[in-house]
Length: 411
Picture 1 (cartoon, rainbow, N blue to C red):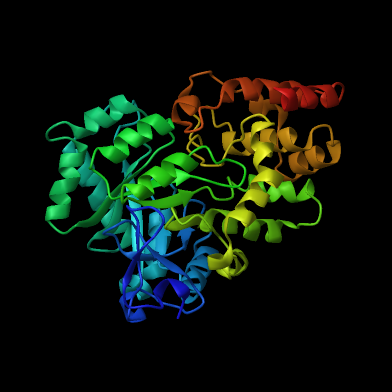
Picture 2 (cartoon, one colour; picture 1 turned 180 degrees about the horizontal axis):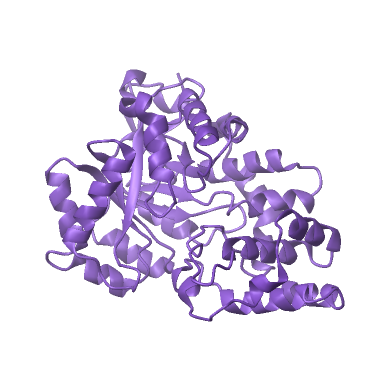
């Protein structure tokens, strides 16, 4: 039995708000596997695997189903999806039906519509009903207010007969078990959301190259909220670093990145996007010996990788929220190219390999209508239009590529 569940008593962690349950019977844990680790999701939440399965990038149903089943067989019991991730809910619903009582499904709904206006309760109820149908379930284990953008949106959601009142009604009816939120807002505002008493958990970005929310994650923990870390590999940017930091291949760096996140006892689980069984098997290795990784390990990782994020231009984290351009520009692909340029500088080999592999066309940059829809949706507040223009200049000809790339790196 794992260290966290060895005794029959309840032990508090270093933070008074967070309680780690040391269970007498591991049978109380859904989909228990002795090779997996589990933590409680907040003071009153379920016991979840410390590694969760992110479903945002599920595209191929057959390949995705194999990955989901592999994850379940490895003891992963937390699966995170959402209606904005293409056919993610449908694919997960089909794949997980044989494991339904053994796992927790987390999905979400935006508190505003595409125009930034608060959605009505009727809209919320309709969205939840559609999620239930796509997932083929009769209730949602964990439901989240998706990406609370700012205080104005939050205040609107709290109004009488608003979004949060609607969620409470669904909880009373047994359709939703637990309620949380995700956000990319300022740490100061996120603390307000935590202190509101509306939520049981928070989903926040955290990785070895971006620890912006570390203090607020610890704060949420002290307040008794569960914390799910999203983007633990920062949209695969962490994996690209293997080409810079010698001595680690991408698989090893993925394990290191996940271990850094999971070694924080303020985090209940880290959601890693996986699409292949090989990715599942590799990522599961990150839980081995996690209980022995302490401050020394975390400090060494921070020294090695932490300054990288702040010494470069802000990266796209590959959320794909911008993948609905009215001009049909493949923005996620182009923002990934911008990441590549930012990381590798004037190493044209990496740049040319990427552009060739992704079949990027020069006229992709000429279609932009500057409607700003992509920038309004971007949780990282990137200047997408400006970046498209810069990429267009780089791809307009081979002359000056090196200096243009260097200019981007220095921004």
